Structures are given as C-alpha cells and as structure tokens.
Length: 381
Image (cartoon, rainbow, N blue to C red; front, side, top):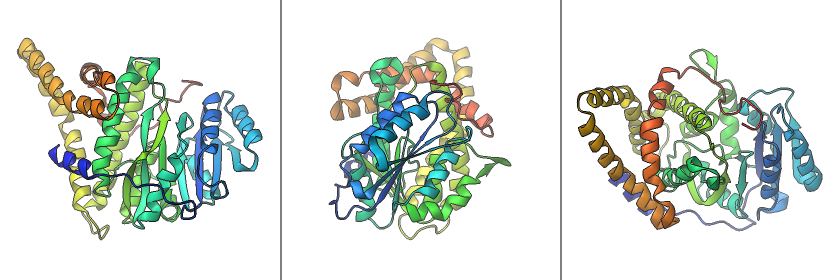
C-alpha cells in the first residue's frame, strides 16, 4: 500500500491540449433498455467543448425492449448530422454493439461512454489529450463518479468506494503506464490499437464459449499486449448511475469478478514476456496482487467461518477493529479530496461488503465460465 501511496503522490493529470492539436474523435454510446437516460447522455456529449468538426457521435440501440430507440431518435432530431444512430436487429450484447461502431467510426481516437452517464464540458478533451502528449499511450481510463448517489444507501457507499478506486488506485497504476481496466462508463482508445486487436476481441472465447462480458478489461489487456501504455485521467470526469438495490449490485460485482478471473489469465500469458520496451515490472506486480486476491478467496473465507465457529466474540471484535483500520484510508482520502461529511460511508461500505457481499469473489471464481450481462435482463432494471 505504501508503494501505491508513493505512486499516487507523484501522479498528475495531463492538461488539455489546444483545439488545433486535438485529434479527430469518435464517441460511441451503446444502449440497452436505457429509456430517457440515453437522450441525456447524448446531449451532454454534444455540449462538450471538443471542436465540433473533430467530433463524431455514434449511438447504437442493442435491441432494447423499451423506448430507448425513440429517445435516440429525438436526440438525432435535435443534434442532426452531429449524431449517427443505429439499431441492432436484436439484443446481441454490448461487445457486438461496440464492434459495429468501431467499424463505422472515422475518428483517430475512439471514446466509449455508457448510456446512463453524463460527461462534463471539458471531459472529452481532457480524456483525449494524453494521446497527443504521449505517443506510447494506447488507452485512457476516465474518472467515474456516482450520478445517483442521493437515491439510496448503496450509491452513497459506492460514491466513496469509487473515489478511492479511481483517484487513488488507478492514479498509482497510471504512473506505471499500466491501468488494468479502462471503465465502460468512460474510456478512450487509439484507433490503430483497437483495429489491431479487433478480430481477436470480438471473437474472444473462454472455456470454448464466446465471451460476452468484460469487454473493457479485455480491450485493455489487448492494448497492453501491443506494447502501449494505459493511463488514467483524473480530470476527465463522468457521472454514471449505479445499482440502488442489493440484487442488481451483486449481479454487477459478480460480472466484474468473473471478468477479472478471465482477464488475469489472459494477462498472465504475456505479462512476463518482452511485450513492451518500457516499464514491465509494474504490470507484473499489479498482476501478482490480482492473483493473490483470487488465490486467497476460498482459504480466507474458510478460515473466517472456522474461526467464527470456534471463537465468535473474539473474531467478530477483531474483525470490526480490522475493518475500522482498513476503512480509515479511503475515508481519509475522501475527506481530503471530496466532502468530509460523506467520508463516513467508507466505514459503512466495509461492513456492508464484509457481511453481505463476501460470497461474491469465491462464487464468481467457481462460475467464471458463465456469461450474461446480468444487470440488463429486464427493461429499466
């Protein structure tokens, strides 16, 4: 942790370059059962300070069962030629929707934005600027914040968790040029890097089955494999909706954990090779940390259950002390960088995760072969 703290303190976001230096950019918004929210997302993108002549916006309705397509048509009517919309013949999955847009996009940089997300005015230009400053940059992760944090206890807790995950963890990874996951809510990719791996990405398989989840982590791995750096831009902010109910939250986390297992395997296949001329040790150390979490998932759970049976009071008291100490770092980080009064949710989240979400990592590992979007089974879910 001290190593990550050192890297975080050294991190600085790259400032936006001039309009003249900004490359052409294609923003892609896949949507499924998003309703009016996709309209709000598209309008927020259109209000960006990115040069209009260099910005192409594409949105794809992935066979929605609600009124998503009508809201996309309304956005098209208002934005005209600035927006291109497509409709898949049926629900084919986010990866297929992105693949279609990648083939249609004309920009030198591809930006992907989730259809339940709102970007700030300068988000796009800040997100794209690292490609101009650093020719070795192949992908950029945006800074994801919680849009619906006032709609329940879960978003409030995730608001603190996300701040630590992105602004601390990813900023440290960025100093190594090795951010391991560019988030679906906001990410940018060099077009040439995407096209180099597009066929492998769309046809990716796991245990003999075509992969339908983890498209963001998979793309990140494939770009790292090409020798590119992947960085984080703190000043490229996006606000996205997160689950407000326990059921949808567990589905989201299960999907993420399954993807982590799969992509850890993929990363392991090239991380110890000469995949790039720059820093490789950082990727290997981060990968080791990822595998440590996977390897210890079952033993840690088994040990905890055993100790709870033998010495319940001692274990519970020790556990709460440990959670308090462990949570103090993200709480302090949030208090110093965001709102002090909201930092207390870091402690609530630690308790909530430990006692109600502890089963997800082992379950996801045991069912890593399963696919499915999980959080998009029903309209407006």
